[in-house]
Image (cartoon, rainbow, N blue to C red):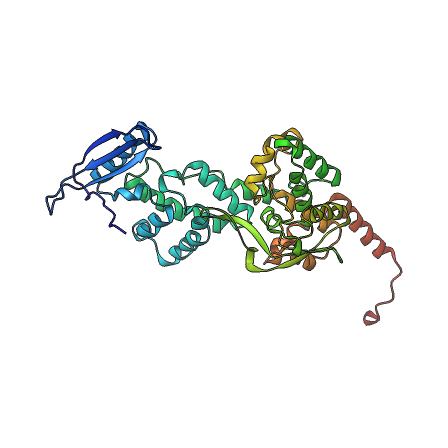
Length: 399
């Protein structure tokens, strides 16, 4: 394999675009320069479909060489650029700050955005990445550290002249956490109120999807009734379902990775078992029969058989438009999980059982779903009154 040719940093370049009709990419852009050491005149070229693309490539190479930046940095993946410039980007930080930043880089930024070229990182791309981290129940400080390291890497790219603004400087993401905290004052704010509302939502999403794909409604109902993440629903295989006692062994989830969606272990690397209530059993059996009961078959897929993610569900069903029309404009895909956990809590499921079903590592996380509704509060008061009115045995220690 030949050595990759790159113009030396800071040298002037000459350029031309040759049109070669009949080829799939007929415009060949070329830059040439005089090597300051050997005095030879090497060149670098690339073919494009349009003359505009060819001109843009020449300008990129010229600009990078003139600024003293490796021209390949403009097109290299974020993971390569970040790793190559990490020391420069992190200068001035103390070790105790660098450790959580580097963890955020390895565990969240690289798996989500690392495969994208630096110049393809936009505000919208970062917004979606951060929303995904929040949907995965990452803590506020974890998300903050992940954003912080991305900001520093992109700031270095800005200084290198690869980009003209820092797309990682986003705002508003902390409102997601404030909304979760506000539910302490309004417990039902992030959960659907009842089964009828859930089925109405599912039907509306199916009607709005392309060719009325019924699978989207099944995904929504299944996710709410199992309190599972959308990625875990996507990762469910027929072999994970036990129809003898109607339970689901959650073993994997679908998540973003370089090159697209992949399956990996559940969050926290802990498999867990959740019950499958009577209301969803016909739906599950129908989908098992659809794939002839093959244990390795996915229980839920997109209309073309692909993996599902929260973003796929949102785009395919026009989620934001549908929930707004139904009067639930606050509702996110992850709130289906919140709905299921809230219903389980209201049904009286003990907190330690609820923690296992949810797959929470901390009991504190589970306890925030135990916000009682108004009827539960009234019932608790009546139980206390009944206790105080009942005959009591004498307190022998007071005699």
